[in-house]
Length: 255
Image (cartoon, rainbow, N blue to C red; front, side):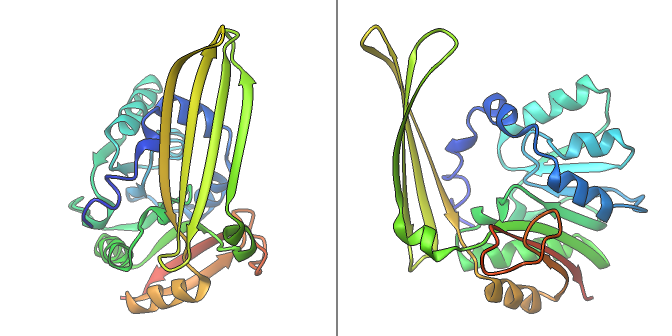
């Protein structure tokens, strides 16, 4: 996959901050736990990050394997598992080149991580890698943002000022630009910390996200030997429509 993922990870360089931001979100967890009912074999979570789903599922008795490419995110996930005295297998691997030495009835990937696979080739290799690790009839569940063209076409520039706990002024500037040909949204966040009129620090985060249309997803599934079980507009199982913010794909390996 070249460096399309490795060079697109600065948004995850502060795992504690990321974990705090998303720790309260559980809609995907509820869906995945329902999908995992009756599964006794190890379950694989791709792009597991800080273990937001992996850890609570292990706490409920499932055998979990968490895979992520970012070492810092995995280290935090391991610490969380150790705190709960859980045995979870964590692997730092590229999801397009999985080598787990097993097959499983269920693989899932949430948090719109599918958008990190920026090229057709990387998407193909992801599906090939997943399929190689699924039992015949095994299921793959993932989500991605729905390409709402009215929002993507307009782009965005925004500035926000806030005060932190130490009384410093935090200035955040966010820029989003959509490349229609590549179907990639390029996002950049610049953050400055000011104290007594002096800029104390500057940070920049950037992330690029691929938007894939529903018919493209259907073709990807068919090409790689998957069939659709469910297509939803949210993890709450809302009907998928043109105005849905999310696309939740629940598919099955046909071989």
